[in-house]
Amino acid sequence: LTTNFTSISRSTQDSYAMGGFPRFNGLEGSYTRWTTEAEWKRTITMDSGLQITPILAARGDALWTDMTAASFTSGGTSYAYEGMIHDDAALRGMVTGGLEVRYPWLFTALNSSHVIEPIAQIFVRPNEQYSGRFPNEDSQAFVFDATNLFERDKFSGFDRIEGGTRANLGFRYNGTFDNGYGVRAIAGQSFHLAGDNSFASYDLLNVGADSGLESDRSDYVAMAAFDAPIGLSLSSSLRLDKDNFEINRSETGISYSDRRINGRLSYTQVKAQPKYGYNEDRDIIQASGSLRMDDNWSLFGSINYDLNGKFAAERRIGIAYQDECTILTVSYSDEGNINSSRQAANDWSINARLAFRTLGDISVGSANEDWNDMDIGWKPNNY
Image (cartoon, rainbow, N blue to C red):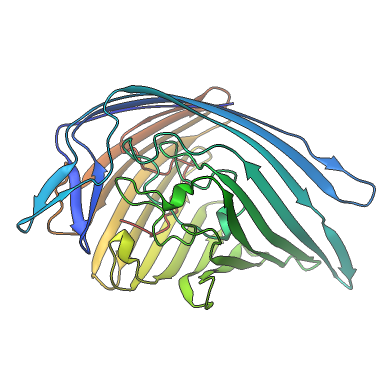
């Protein structure tokens, strides 16, 4: 069972235009949402080794909005949201029936073992209710890649819900060697079969546009990683155009982890996304890390640098406490000057999170922060 409560009030609209497309990161006014979601699944293993997993999920949202009109003027040009904001109380829900089939194959060789696992999924559900008619606070940063290929809902937060019938096909590979080295890989494709495609529906930020999921047949996604026993990992991921196999997105990273230090450095290339407001290709460097000071306390930080625009898209630093029952994090983050026409309430924030492992989370601060413990990873699709 998952429950999420969000309540946000803004005195200033956060909006700007990029490539002729308006983006409304946050509307002036108040927005409150209560979400409860439950999921049931059970894996049945056949004598042949085939694994069949039926999945049932149900979600309900109660929402209330009191927003101003979504419009602004930049450089003498007026921009307005093309959709219609539902400025009132509302209820929405989503019921999903799914089936996942896996067939893992184990191969053993001298000093190594290998598992190749074909995977097929189908999720049947109605269309997303009120699509694009509510503020989008926590589902702004969306990246389609191999890490979320087999997710039931690929949106990054709770403000958007994936609707329609979708199938995911691919495979997973895992190789382990007696000397401690390992190799991992995932590849596949997603298919929208029926209903409205949530990633093709326009919202306040046009999330889903040029993402690789906006058509009935998605781009191809793949990822491979090499793990060394000293805590070093190398990884690379690709998103290939479904028609001509051109690289639409690539990310290469190196990470290191031991008892005290965790660090990651990655380089990302993103092909131009005109509908998303980026008319040029982008090259982004991301560095992140954490230092454990003792058994409970640690420092963490990250920076994302746009090589084309020559600015730090986001910087973050914080301190964290963690024990068997509690996680507490406090952080400061700021953003670079993405666009001179941006009408933003602020470009910095202080965020806090208190989590009880058996009860839940309490977070104060930015609505679109990633609060997966001290996971400061960031996928640069939008800034």
